[in-house]
Image 1: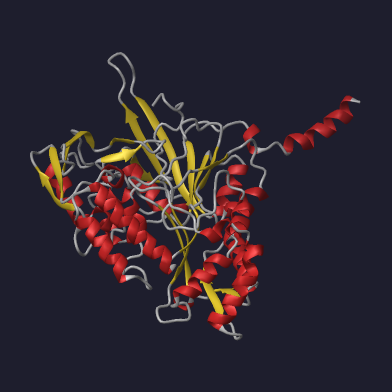
Image 2: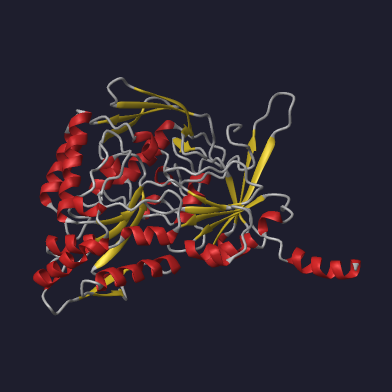
Length: 486
């Protein structure tokens, strides 16, 4: 009987899920979903998730995010804000570059101004349009002067796009050593200063990048402790592996997730047709299929909880089930488009979640007589997907994402409101102007919102210091510390 029982137990042990595995010893292993890691200067353009993760951990800005998305000191050890909100003064910590030379305020000021220069392709450059000057006051004190108050300046400066990078030389918190391993693998290390009678502690993290399938599979097999950078496109893959006890974590991310028309002068240049498509799409069915806790369908550009901006009011059609409004939508489609309906091409990323979105669009827009297909290229698309996390809680970022010169189809009147908002020194007036611009964008249906962006991670029991946050930014510091003890 004992021998028979043992035969049954052996297969059961082999199928033990990842959460019950013996935890690996030594340095933590973190994997970011995406292409091979590279240390890239944001002046060259948008950062991929792996590159952003590497940059924010080896080249912090004046300030940085902690695990919960709070602003903490980075290169600056402290800072002050003037009463009128027009001056931010930072005291630089006494630190050296890797070649042993001192980091000076003059160098930092020059590097920040370089990111804001006209030729810079830094994707957050426009968000700092209120910066008037960046001045080194002493060797260790730097001032950022503003044309108008910007309460979200610190959140923007904490983003990896404003990390202080001199060539390939960062300012910490980690020092990198490339191992030559797969996915651009890099060994990150940092020393933590201890008291007089204690030995300095050391943190070590092995960071690499991998495809979603490989990253999830390696986590399930116990080869890594943390997976970062998950989106809606690859979320369904997590259900195909035995991941153990609740390792899946979702960020309460803020931002934009929806469709934007990209063919000026094409078949979607009529706002009435875009409004028709927005009303025919069953957001609730798609959101329910994703099974993301707390994720809610959204019909408007702005979201609740933005600074100084009231929660948007849902349009009357939004609370009516799609099935109830379908007869009227079909009649509108015949009136606006005619009997010969065009094919709508949508540019989407690869992945099971994107396939799910395509099927939902085919079902819903097919119900009013349209054919929907995946665009063979971005140039051939009628709609593109925006899936971006907001870098701050300001409504300005949401609105300015659709200004003329950035969006293919835009509203010049909304642009005038955006510029007036940028120039006014009165916060309440600024918020009101931005809300008016958002209302015009919604009315013209320059964006078909779906929900907030989805960002997920896989976290093993060994990682105690992980926390979700609205920016979906995850420092690799203090991963083995209990929250609140960092």
